[in-house]
Image (cartoon, rainbow, N blue to C red):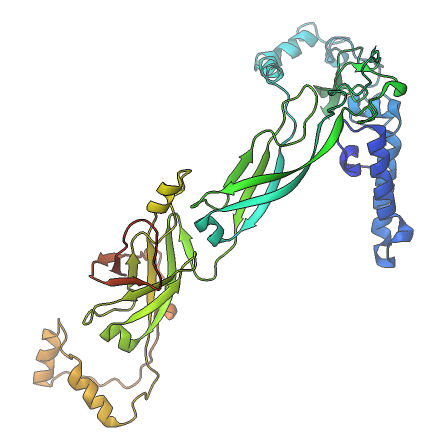
Length: 452
């Protein structure tokens, strides 16, 4: 069987026999071949055997001890010729019958020169810490714009309030753990290659790192000797205005507790869903709007978009200001809030909103009468700004070739080139900026028009 036995049962390496039995009963019922459909039976049988094998090893104290030390379920010693390791474990490979020029101590000193011992001491100097609890949450762009409080129900292990983490009654007498000889630690040796092993120090699974054990009769009535009890509480995570997708919010010391260890944190990571209207680029917002050709030529006054906080944004363009394909309407201060723990600052400081204008031209043969075309020609200017060469040819009426075979296309059908770059030019306009109802945000935004 492959895989970590603790992971197969879904328990930690410090789990007691009661937790192991509980996990086994649950998984055995789930994967029992008689409890699944015909097409799931083959896969269930494989999983059932894995669960049964893991339970057989971990429920037996001697087999579990062997597995914790050597990382194998084989009852034989994984290193032939030696039953136990004393002193430097590399002596078994290099100490006896090895070269006089390169012995076991030299092999160990080789790694010492690479600061392996120094790193190990540094790690031991740091306080042990329980694992962090990781949570992934989907949020909307509206949540990141307005801010939000997310509440979750947390169930975690805390140190037993009755026995204060001893796992025993008040006057119970503890005995030295025979397995680790009172050290609370065990050595785990793992083969990483031919003639090469690694040695790590782990908590003793019998005394759970305390170095002491109590008889079953002395167990605390509340925690049953586990030293831990469950706590259920409500955790609150504050999403500040202007937060970004991918950011994490950390609540210190809210993970599982364990005696003698620093409590880990609960870390919530935000994942922003795609918005159907707005696209966020850092602190700016982008969106599209369509207008008919007549509005592009004559100006308009209309609600252009519903903002993330529900406000209707109304823009009035000045008469005579022509909006051209590719133009952007830039509204200052209507982008995303700049993230800050100061609520006033996040209200007053924002990015900008860019509205890309898509001009919808009329369909072919839009006119009702031919006279409509004449009226439009009389109204619209028809002089080109750089037509000197064309005018000269028209006057002479020479070298003119009539082309009748052509087709109309648009920008989406043009070929692309490796050096294409997007240029954005801005120009200012005295646009009127209105809201459907009073806006209490900071600053008075004035829209601009940017041409692309």
